[in-house]
Image: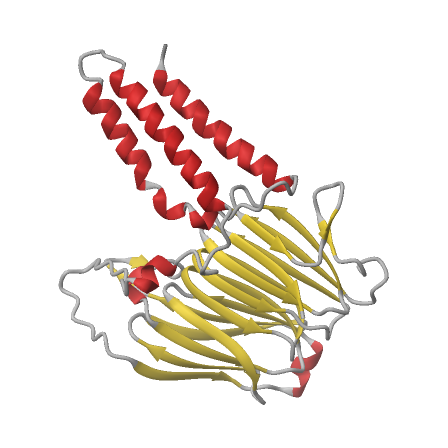
Length: 326
């Protein structure tokens, strides 16, 4: 009997069973509770290799026993309500800073440097579609204040380079604000960990109708959009902490989030009808006040009757998705 196949079969049965029970609302399972215990699988593999060197099946039997005990523990632990809502708190709690040095001769300072960027607002801009492309790795972006300019950003820069460009046509303004870190010919705009610690406060004009494209490899996004007319906001990132608060100043708003390992919190107006479509794999989902439909989507009770609509599309792996009304 090939115990290795049995071991993997047990793991797949465990994951599939938990997902099924969670989807049927039999249990409420929080995958982020068990994420930190992944090294146990390395231990199981090591035990199997050490005890199975001479063709004996002892190692596989011991490994299978350890695996079953571990899965029972994880099953119980996964149903406990998390103390933290952030998947990445094990970095923060231990005060660990990811730092990848691509250039051993780099002598750039790690102290903070203040920078400001701005793009003036013209009256003609209010009639144009306005697109904001924003990207940066290891950066914290926050939006809550307005400005008389079209766009402003105050940066506390630790490393990396920031730039703001604007292109315009008869119908569209496109603003691109990004962080890049070019070393040895590489441009790591969206995922550079060695630029961690940057902080950016963004301010926007309230007159245009905004389309936002946000991307990062690792970092934080905290966008309060209640003061702005936002037609759509898209986020594409890896290990990130994302908070988006949607307003009700446009009749239809789209929110699209695609992540790897992330904590995502979205708030929508209580008076707006909201529909969620989720392709979330092993992600944890918490959609307060939403009703699950036969097609697998989720809707607020007032979705059919409300004047304003918010459509949310979620795509993530080992992430935590929370959607609530305010």
